[in-house]
Length: 85
Length: 136
Image 1 (cartoon, rainbow over the protein chains, first blue to last red):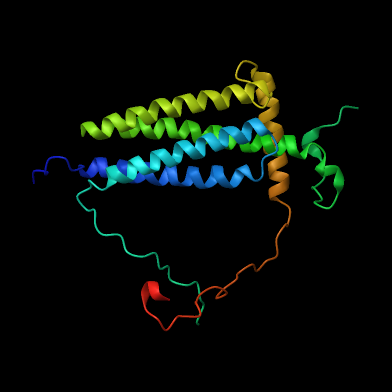
Image 2: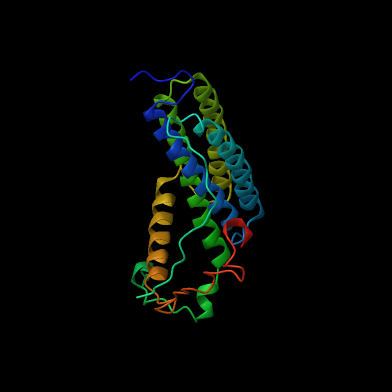
């Protein structure tokens, strides 16, 4: 099946998926660890990583919209962790 | 007699002696984590670049790759300066590797948390639950 021009191929979309999740985790972890670190220079580098990750995430998000399986994003409503049993 | 640092008794988290040099030790571990993530970032981005053909994707990823390499270099240089990382002295690096592995194993073997820390159902509903969707 030929791809529409300007859309991501399946293999590309997979890479974007992995990178986007990687960058999201990096942003979360570097932000969190800044609260645990004592060394100011190390903290500054972590903040640099956060800022860089945020930029990367926003660019990757726009790129990801070109995936063939892109769709509307619903409201975030996680199922409560509730042991009803 | 020379004491072997690898043969210490199990660590006691209430003993203040274990707080000695804690900030430096912890910073070293977290810096190593940051370095590994920066390195992974370089590899992941390079990997993704080799898989992409869309020009827009290639431009974006090439830019991210350069930034990732730069950040990795900065972290590595900081760690060398702080003596947390010894790429030019393998014996120093060997000692550091063994000691931090040992210390981390000791910490991981302590019982630090209660067995059951589940907090089920504490925040599972809002006062306006009868209202629909974003109204709630």
